[in-house]
Length: 318
Image (tube, rainbow, N blue to C red):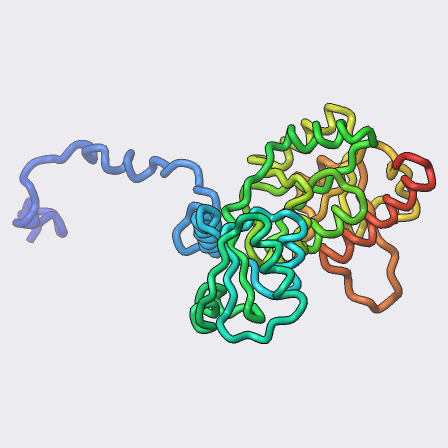
């Protein structure tokens, strides 16, 4: 045993390469290299933020696709009000064998006076065309809505001879809320409504119906980037006031009401986005009784716009 020159454990594995192996062929260095910066949450497959972003993008593509197709305003009152307001209808659908009342007769007369085609169709077909809406036997087809450029909204406000009053929506996705805001804006003297290009409802048949045709009277614009557009208006002398439950002032302290003003309304659930909030010169809250839930966007807009209109009347600015 003492004369054995082999060291214990020195037996070569017959499956390994003979001779000394120098270096690692770069494998160690490669394993130590980083994989670059961590992707944003919206870019990571399977991440909740990525799923939300994908869903929002899908909804936006659907909205853009739908914007290229005609809409149908359903219901006797909405159809009559739209025709009175000069909504550019293309076809009036009347269900066969309906009980005609004053609204039906007026709708047919107004459509005929405006050169709009009048078609009698089975009720089942009108159900299909209106996606089962409560149409009461009347439907008015309107072409895709034509939005204004944001600069045109400001120009129209200045041409009115009054201090500009504009309304901007930050992520309001319910078309009923949008239509109600448009109606309130028109009722209380606003000169236009601005929507963001993404994550916002558009002027669809539902919005037309809720606006009671006022969308035809009030310029409605679309901003590619809402924050950038608000900053542009601010640089031209307009004050930016965001409506927020935790506002820096309440509605009684809104001393800017008679100045050139933009009122910004947040989404139904999240309120104002961070960037839009930071762009505002101030935020305004509406005092409410204890224990009462917050108002939705359209009701809050009506309350604030009514108070702005009152202050402007009192100051003789309108």
